Image 1: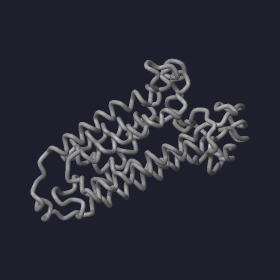
Image 2 (image 1 turned 90 degrees about the horizontal axis):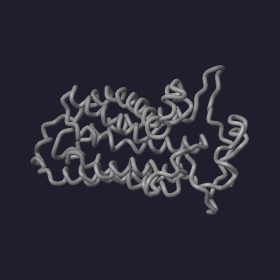
Image 3 (image 1 turned 120 degrees about the vertical axis):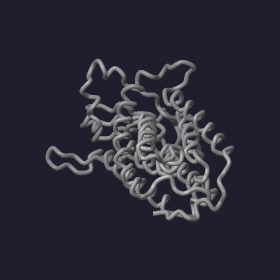
Image 4 (image 1 turned 60 degrees about the vertical axis):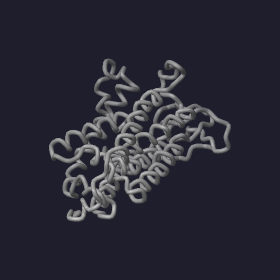
Length: 290
């Protein structure tokens, strides 16, 4: 099927362009912020331990997360996928409006932000990470849909009925050609939106609201990390490798190499959290969740 005539720019006001890609980040951060605040305010989720942070601290942490996503995501993309920019076109490193953000880089940036924020505010590192992990799939969903609208990060060639030819008049006018060619490809961005966004959100929703795993330090973060890695590794089989990275050792892709440590780290977090003794159920009764 032909790629829809999407315009990556939603609104153009003179030199100012409001892009779908930017709106995806804004929507993910704002909705994630409100969802995180709702989690820490819900006393039914904290039957063994009080919330790791107040809603005021969650509000403060939003700025930290925003900067971590942008800086980590961009630097990760440059270091993992386009290191040649460092010595060929270093100024392009700062042109984030052109796209080019790495989830793995953003994840590292957010984890560093969690560590620094936890140290500064004297809150539990792993339990703050649990709250953050529970909301990340919201941003992943919007981000992957924006990737599809932008016609980027497409999949490998395919003959399935829903294969998409990622070429339209707008892309041709903007670039002068269609980088994806005129062959049908997997809409891998939508696969990722479904698995990394919707399915992963439902798994973590069960973990936080059904199994009450927020009472176990680091388990929700471990579930997010492990399942994201599994989904990403499986989808790398239908996602087109980045240019210049098609022939990595063992036939693996950069996404797989970056996801394997995530999988091991996530499994370790789950193992660690599940074997740690829980405090008595009355520990949170005197806590006034704000």
